[in-house]
Image (cartoon, rainbow, N blue to C red; front, side, top):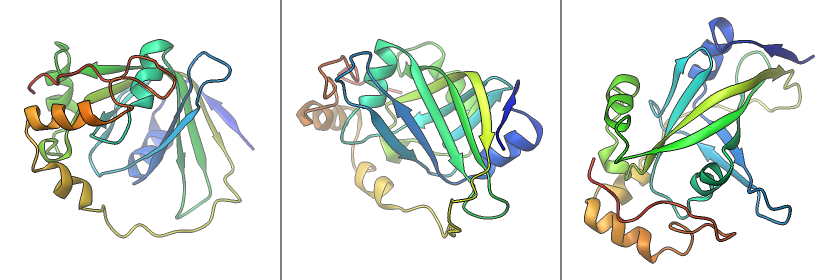
Length: 194
């Protein structure tokens, strides 16, 4: 059965760092707002910063719901499932914030915690930093076995042809980048250079 942890370390840290896929869930404060659930992957785009803090790279996409929700209220849950090996599900419930390109912390976070990934072909928008308030695992008995073959290369192929100016123009054309589906402020545009 489930267990609560004080820290993200040891076996728990090893487990979440080894997973090629995790999910994020956020929601606006409004009771009739849109709950957002997103899959996240790409090897090297997730890092444990310390025993109570994790971060991941937020790349170009069709909307910016997570960013908008975090800007409004900070609530976020991250979830990892064991698709191979012993069954396990880990959730980190906490408060998150988008660290944008013009934030003084951005460059150091990127260099220190994500050295194994070249973010340039992916349209890096922000680094999402999450401070854990509750860390739990559960059995995961019903999660199926699935194999990880490799990361898809389509995202890098699509966004590698963009520079900061064209990426900002791309985002400006999208309906839910600067403003969320619920009308909340999303990604600040134009993008600042990295």
